[in-house]
Structures are given as structure tokens and as C-alpha cells.
Image (cartoon, rainbow, N blue to C red; front, side, top):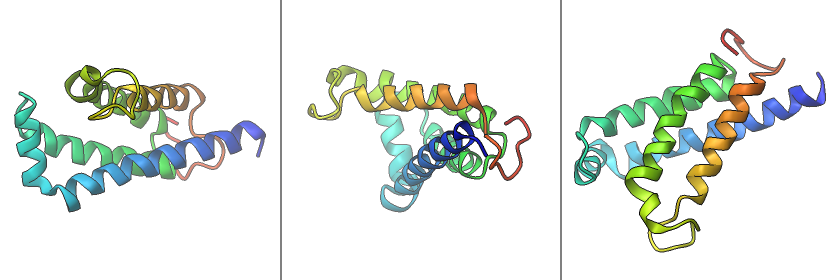
Length: 130
């Protein structure tokens, strides 16, 4: 393995783990009902919350295991962009601002773009579309 392969592994496993943790948060802490209610409070259909849970679960696992890595990264970008538009954008740049600014979701988008560009690396479980 090259240093680029190690970098791809580190980046996709760390980002995938964080994405998966957010899916777990929506499911186990906020609950699917709480998540759908929150999405409705943002002015979007509540079922978008369930789509977010499914996308974060599938995308996080895809990144962690290197399965359809590029596709998973690309499909997670609109989800992160949605958090900026619907939730964090109005709170300013800094994530330490009240309600969290858009700094952190923007960093996630950059990381997902980098993953999409470099792919899975050689340590992928199933590097199709990787």
C-alpha cells in the first residue's frame, strides 16, 4: 500500500464513522418520529428524515468498507449541503455559534469531495465504483 492508499483509508473510515454516528443519533436518540418531526419543522416533508437516516447508514458503511466509495461520497454531499441551507447557514460561519454555524458541514463536504476524487484506495473491501 502507498501513502495515498493509507490516506484514502484513514479519510473514508473516519468520515464514514462520523456519518454512521449521525445516523445512529437520529435513530436511537432523536428516534425516527423525532427526526421526521424535526424535518417537518424545517419545512420539508418528514419522510426526508427517514431518507437521511437510511442515506447516512448506507453511505457511512459504504465509506467504512470501501464499497461504492465514490458513489457514497457523492450521494452524501447533497445531504450535507442541506444541513447548511436548512439548519446551519443562518447561524453564521463558526460552528461554535449558537445553533452551530456552517463551518463543520462545509468541511464534511470538502472531505466527501476529496474521497470522491481519490476513491477507495487499495484497502477497500469491494472497490466497485471506488
